[in-house]
Amino acid sequence: MRPALIEGAEREETVADVRVTCITKPYPQSPHEHITHLGNPQAGWKWTREDVIRSIEAGTNTFFVVDPYTGKRSDVGIVRPAGRAPYLRTYADGDWNDNLLALNQCSL
Image (tube, rainbow, N blue to C red; front, side, top):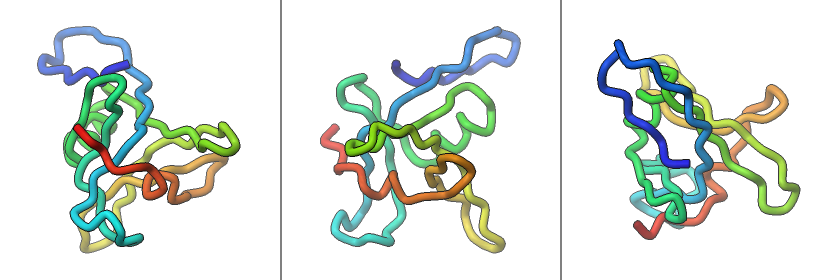
């Protein structure tokens, strides 16, 4: 499913549950580099980290990844460290994990 950017608050929309299959980092080999974009080439979308954060905050979309080995779903959430910009991270069963960083680089 392609994420939906909802412009007008007066429109009633359902929340799209969107699978993330790739990420973009400025330095792909760095295990700690920040993610700049998330996407799903098969669904035809690639968004900035900021757009994904805004969409989660607005309640217009939820995002998730699927572990290729276990098939287990991890939801994408927002981490807000004190004094730093918010970033995205996955969590499952109440625990934060690094499943986003394990995804392939987006080719879009």
